[in-house]
Amino acid sequence: MVTRFSMTVGGSEAATEDAFGVVNPATGEVFEQAPECTPAQLDAAMDAAHKAYRDWRSDIDARRAALRAAADAMFAVADELAPILTAEQGKPLGEARIEAIGAGVWFKYFADLDLPREVIQDDNRAFVEVVRRPLGVVAAITPWNFPLVLASWKIAPALLAGNTMVLKPSPFTPLATLRMGELLNSVLPAGVLNVVSGGDELGKWMTAHPLARKISFTGSVSAGKHVAASAAPDLKRVTLELGGNDAAILLDDFDPAALGSKLFWGAFQNNGQVCSAIKRVYVPEALYDDVVDALAAQATAVKVGEGTEEGVQLGPINNRPQYERVSELVADAVASGARAVTGGRPMDGPGYFYEPTILAGASDGTRIVYEEQFGPALPVVAYRHLDDAIERANATHFGLSGSVWSADAERAAAVAAQLECGTAWVNTHLVLQPNQPFGGAKWSGIGVENGPWGLHGFTELQVLHRAKR
Image (cartoon, rainbow, N blue to C red; front, side, top):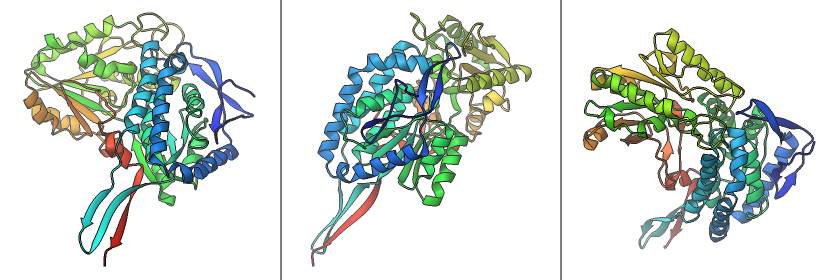
């Protein structure tokens, strides 16, 4: 079967006999086919990356130039990639375009990032340097919520460090990434970046493949545990960016009238399908009703619809399993005593649309408070004592990020420092930058992405010790 989207293996398009359907979440119907990678084609991709590694690792100036060209290429084709991404992921067209541009921003940032050699001894006895060497072939597996930009989080630092890569996007959103692979093939040497597509079996083959020296994975906690287990027998290095159950704590001096949209969009950006989005809000009892009302007003004013419609702010949930999970968690919360102040049910019509939902009266122990909903539903939980709220915010296996909101930024920062998470924001949420490390504590991951810290994760240390006598 021939499709208009091709895998990129060894610098060439890789034809496949089989394909799988890609669903438009706004309709719930298959709208396109994606190529299904075979074990033999994966072997070819890994072999191409392995062969390209020898020359690619030897010239950092060439790598920088290639990443700059990749950035320019992404900027140039953002308008082409955006409708593909909207059709398969569901996000509004403007946000899809921003995501494509964001991938270019990440390429541009890493193209200019320093990878210094550290001199630790220089005396009459020896000259000793610590250098960072590439690992080899990296297997990268990316999720369906931000396919392009999260791919760039892996591609850019891995390639700058001198590694080569085999990349697999989620089977829910493979198309824009496949097209990106075709595009980048024109500015990268053959075999440096290979893009393959398929289901969970392909991911298993990749993590166990003998030529892959590192696995960089973004996805669910359960899948991350399987990746770690698969990598362990071969002692492959891993970076795991997994789930989150981010708490936002409002302090008692917070003014609900000044709520604005920051708190709401910290939870509902990308329809709540962000690992580091706000998943639960802790509010002092005295402010509770006012905060619930302010969030509800935001939720009812949002326009939900198909991503190409004018003025749409929230699209559908990306896939049926996630749609059913959000529906189940909201129903469980209501059955447990919570009240859907807004939303609380799927929207009429085709596709995976769900009403933006604010849940009042939610309590710790409820599944939607304890688990990660990853969708457009936000539980608001009351607290009486701040120490108790901090303890409850930390009483989870997750530790990705969190935020504290107050009229006194210094007071909020002191509270934020007590959160057991990788990123703690004050009076904002979901501010992510290429120079800012991103990673989680506990079950939210291993290692970090972005900045020099993320770059270092794609290297290994080598000591060069030169005796002088």
